[in-house]
Length: 486
Image 1 (cartoon, one colour):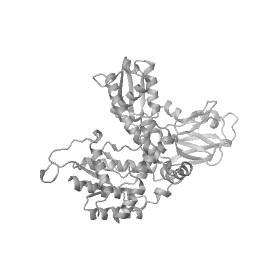
Image 2: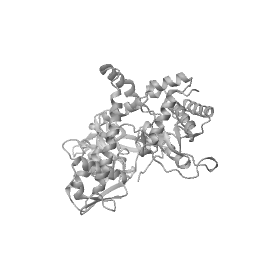
Image 3: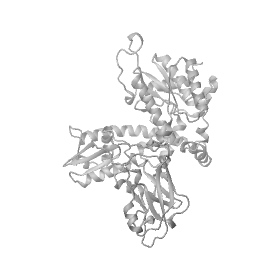
Image 4: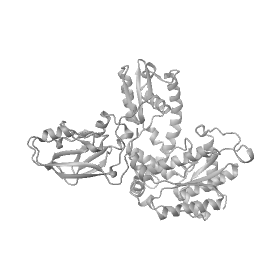
């Protein structure tokens, strides 16, 4: 195998990344063979695809030049059956040829997707990150994990975040260094990676779902990017990558300023002084709050949460509290803003696929209004109470059960107009992390029932109601998927 310019380029880039302050690690003494202290090494996430194969070759070259240990890790998601097994075999054979240690494991993302209310792609990413971080803890001679994300991935990431709505931090895209994770290929595009492998005679595995799949990234790659190139020219998609690089540099400076602002607002106990915080400009205060919450280990705090916190701080009410995702609660004590961990009060996290609906014609009711009042909307913690009786004529098309989705609206019981379901969940103190497990019953015209939380106005039983149907939500046979994230 030749020491091509590609290998040298990526090896040099790795050295640059490891000199950055965010890549700094503490190396335990006595690591390495025969008690010799050796600089910490890198584990490469190896899928068998061209990106990870090229990265492994480059990191191996870096290891040979630096004398540091290099290994690879492959997690089999068991989704493509024989093809997934062939990927694992390919990775084993490649690492044996290169004399690189390989860590392997298998983990099906489908149960994780159900329990966390995520898509398969996101659940798989969570499993890979957990696998890699567990390896670092168990193998202290390695300090970093490297993945083959390249410039094309960066472009897609920035565009997806742009269309979803994000702030400057989100538009930074994939960071070159993020905790223990390194991304040394971000300045390289897919075409250059393929050209290197072909010139070196190195084969790789192809996952057809990356191009033909229905996930968001595959559709963007297959449908949106060719359209953009047709309208703006072939070089237009480089813009998002340049934007990410520019924002990464500028926000690095802004983060240093934010650290100074935070220091000026914080007490010795780490809590915030309200007068100093409110003396800042709004943009400064929001950055201070985000940095402070990151230190507290806040999870899934989005722009809307920061805006709500800032409004709450300005209300100036001592003794008030504000709940955040992940069981974090803010509270005010006179001129101090503090945080604490609290037990979340939301319903168990449930996956709609574990439940089925039975719709039955109801018997004549002497007092339909009393039946509706007695039923209510069910208890979110007790699936034996999930029964809803409603007028038969309100049902349109197929009745089905699904999980809550961003943007859902419905007309709650007793309300004249429609309401965002997200507002209802917030009023019921269902955190953002818990919302993915909220169950919704809907027909072809919209939501009928937020199970255990609210029923729609059209399900109201009136004294004149003559024909009724009863909708029952029950667990599928053999399912043991009741999950509680408390």
